[in-house]
Length: 514
Image (cartoon, rainbow, N blue to C red; front, side):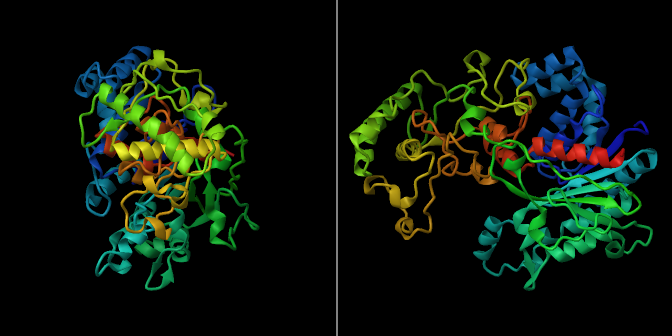
């Protein structure tokens, strides 16, 4: 690795969203200074995705190799065939991802050894990135934990995975680090005490925690709030660290905490993220060029013919249901509810693509005109009654300026068989992603049933595909997710939006070479 290149170590990498954004930063035309040297991920399918993308980055400027990559993601050749064609690049990609899934806290000997070797060999700047798993911090995770008999936060090792981050800070002593997590980390408690102030204190002085006096201290910055005293940044509110992604070109209402650490001997002061125009970041603009697909049918014969019969029956029922819900015939007549015909559950053909409405510069970031396919664009199955509910939700949104219906808006004939349906506890059990708004937060729950992620088109009556969720997360269209569809959803839902990470990477680059 050249001395003017920035060595990047990515911990808890997931499918690689944070690393993807940072590695895409150009210092000048064709010069990408951030080089990911190590990515650590324990989940097998996410690791496979990570390795595939690491390979892509190594061949993306070689036309013949890129065409072979396209053949792989389109299913024309196997991964083994692709890697055997480019042994040097595939070996480097596998080395970057430690040859297989590895877990911090379990495989530390290997991980520490590799990091020490990398740091020793590299004479330029270093950056550590990553976010400890969020299940113990997230509000949803804490709600689930509360229902587990004898669960105590003090014994949940996930609360303390940031300590592994501290240990590697002490080993690598990078000039800059980025630590990402969910908003819930700000309020998570141990023994009744909020953890976040202690986490900040530990990150400022990791050597004290790991008992290494040679470890340098760090200043911790917010990426959205300027510090009153930049050389000794302190923030009066923990909420100063919250990033609202839709403010920065991501078509999604997603809140994340990202801490920027700068080693105390680095005198440069980081800038903050600059807000962008989000007036055109509507879901319909982001997704409307993707091919139409039909939902699958669960618990019955799943065929094109059976689906068309089902949705035609539902379309006839939907008019009466909307009348039951209080809409007039004139309002219902304003909707186009005639079902699509001739749809498949999976569509990779670019001949079926519409004209992109994605605003620049996001369009150039997402769309690959040379790909010739739409990847990971396959629907899940739904039971017939849910198809009708999905169509109702999408129609309701069209009649109410994009508002998703609450349980009180559902007519009795469409109410699901849930004991708590009328209590309000599950008021938004079904939630449509409105065409004229940013999406709600894409979470790993999208892998479950899709009820929170209903497509805005009542004629498709389905939940979002992996590719649609990936677009809303700002993964480029040529980013291929490995594993089963369920595993792909989990990867997308847990990831950092790469387009946001790219903007953060530009701040880090300016900090290092200012």
